[in-house]
Length: 192
Image (cartoon, rainbow, N blue to C red; front, side, top):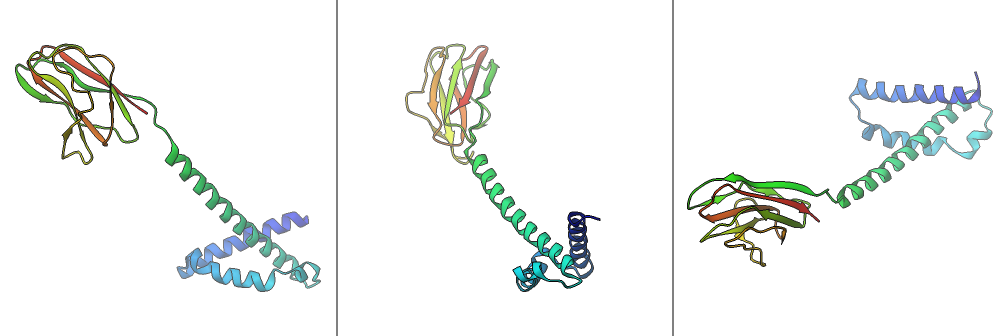
């Protein structure tokens, strides 16, 4: 058996012993790690590599396994941190939304379902028909319960509108139609 294979075999045996010891005694790696680190600090020295003791190769294999495990732990922590940063910086793709499809109510107020705009900064929306004597309004909400009318020029009374842009200053958005409608449709695109 080559030296490398013996090292890997010893590493596998050590890892299995740790797992079995943990399972048998109900210990976690958090409880075993300080003792393993203490043993490693006392045993894994340069003098060990020069040792002619019968068990030197086993100790070298265990030291290698412990060092490798620590390196892997550090690498995994760094990678997890990078993944979290990447996930946080992801910009969602544009998303098509529908407020109303062929709304045929008479002279009443209709409110669309709320749309979750989390991760988006703008809404571009279009309506297909005029709302005589009333209007189409965008409402925003931070919590989905308390709504306020968006008033930066996106109120569209009386006529069909295409490509109006609304800045999403809150997480949720909905549309309110006031006045007589006939086959009224309103769609939009959430984007950044």
